[in-house]
Amino acid sequence: MPEITDTFSFEFYDVKHIAFLANNRRWYVRLDHLCEQMGVDLAGQRRRIQGNEAISEHYVVMVADTDYQGSTRKQEVGFLDLEALPFWLGMIEVNKVKEEIRPRILLYQRDFVRTVFAAYRSEMFSPDLIAEMDTHLPQEERALYELMSQFQELRRKVEALNGKLNKDLASVGLTLGDLGGRVDRIEAKVIGEATIYDNQAQTIGEMIVAVGTAMYEANRSKIGKAEAYKNAQMEFKREFGVHIYSALPLSRYEDAVQFLSHRWQHYRPGQALPDVFRRDQKSLF
Image (tube, rainbow, N blue to C red; front, side, top):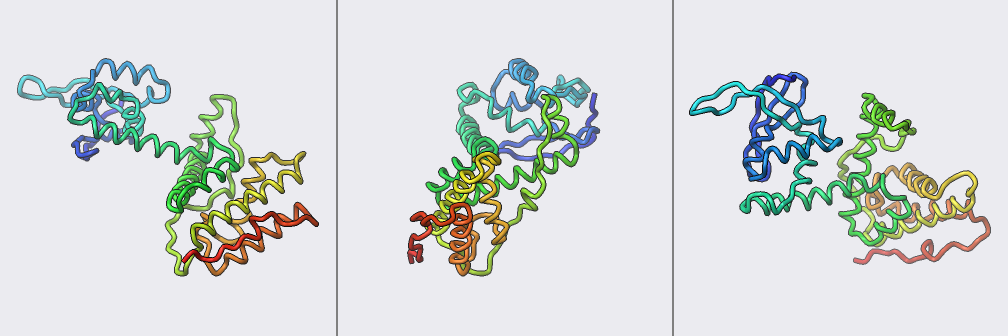
């Protein structure tokens, strides 16, 4: 049984909580306090957690000071690992919590849905589908999704290094693929020169899709469509040193068009370039 070594107060959606550090170096929150503040049944929530294999191991029992008849006493209490708190809150039936906090929980769950989608989008869908999705998004959202994708790739690398992901995959008979070179780091870049406009970034994305399609059709027996699109994206990012299309300097837009045109012609020698490579993309301003 873990033992509590320290405590720390924090606020979540304007509600004060206490985090408990245990001697296993994990942080926990008392489940009874959470349930009381939210107005949900403790026993029912404990059964739901223990019955869910995704988070059951995050529930532990520790001895803690508990209010008793005007004083305190030591008692075994159930705790939830802070790592599992977002998932558990996402499981809560909103119509069962206290009315006064219902809007906050609903706000959190809606945000949780969007955040999880952003984190796992690049792993769930093929690059060609993602490219199609991105053509309908504003620049800010495309940048967000790209950074979330890079974060997820970096997280996979870190887990691979500490053996956690290898262990998880081995439990279901899988092995870890080569993640090397997919992302070097996640960083916030402040570019000192003007970058391309939204319509130009969208066109770059369409050109890369065209290159990926040409690559796939020229190497059907050697490469899958998803891998071809991914390779086309990575070639472009390596060539121009950008993490997202919209970070391309405006002064290098024509270079980018030429690069992608040559890549397409490499796979389709002697054929006329598609219209997207000849589109006029001068500034809208």
